[in-house]
Image 1: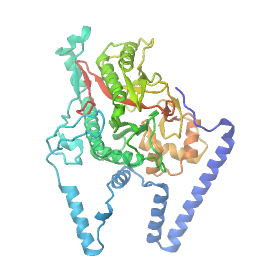
Image 2: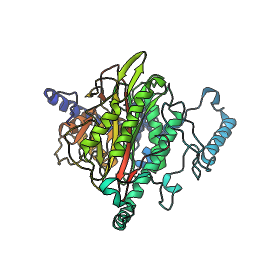
Image 3: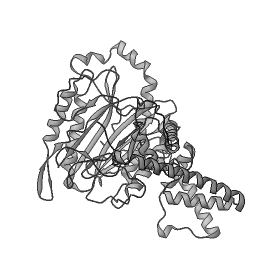
Length: 493
């Protein structure tokens, strides 16, 4: 489907003029900075000016992956409570040392069992023995130095494909793909440990930005961010209530999670372009239990029906039947639970979150079949509203078009932004916060220009009617030659 930004074509000339003004202003600012630095002396002055600029934009403007990772991780640490504020002088320095020592040293004996009972319909985590600290700080690759990352849940094929288990030829085909499988499993284990961490701290009263930044920093820490080789798969979705998908806060967003919200937490991790796409619903009020159960049942039904030679239309029909079997009572009113018919699961390719095939969640006439070796995100959405979403609200999600043709860009700001997108994200999805963090703090007009030139696609929030509630559950599955592996499966969902 095609998306459009809320700028009209009739304003194109004005927009270009604004972008040119912005370019001239940026160049003037840079010149002024150089003059100030030379004339006034100032390493001190220069540092102060940089600090002010960072604070004004709400994000670090460091260049390069190491600086970006450091800024995110340090920015996402817990802030001390008032009664924990350190004393000045020697006493304060000593306290600081102890605090640092505690953070780096403790743990290493595995993750303790985690009680998730505050979250509705999210399973508890059992104890995880090993060398991980609590909370998790040891990168996944260091926990499994022999690259024997944990497998996901394996399900046998049925019917005409049941012969695949134990078949020597199919087993040999899997050995050829072993390196790719280990990349996928490393990303999946990172996803599990990051969401385990997120489930321990996400509570009512937190801002959505804080929720996302802590999760994103932990992802980069555990996956050991390495340019485009490994890192985020796509922006952290934390869509609330009637918003089903594609919402993440931009800087300046003040929205706070409340006890009566329904939040869909959808985030991705990638290793060598192999993306794990998995999501679950966070709620604290038991009145939403049936709404959440509908998508849990729907997704597990879709996983069960999926497999080599499975028809997409038949998977959609089974999911629809499952979701529509639920109803939910909210504040004394009973609602039929509906699948959101214009949202789908999808195939996943290398560095390509939507690789061409769509897995419907309602019955349709698509007789396309799943094939051996493919990877899919099986995701379902349920709603108490119309069961149909439209684009609305401020856009935060963007992605460079995978097969976009080269376009000669006239604006320097657009060229610079495209260069930064290629460096940091390539064809992986990104959000405006991440552009700010990468140093592209004045990007709105340049981003609009890239959208207008069909190089970047915007993905605005997808919303059902106001006052309705939506839920989501999603897992990534791999159709191996011998079996189906639900690579993102965990004890939580």
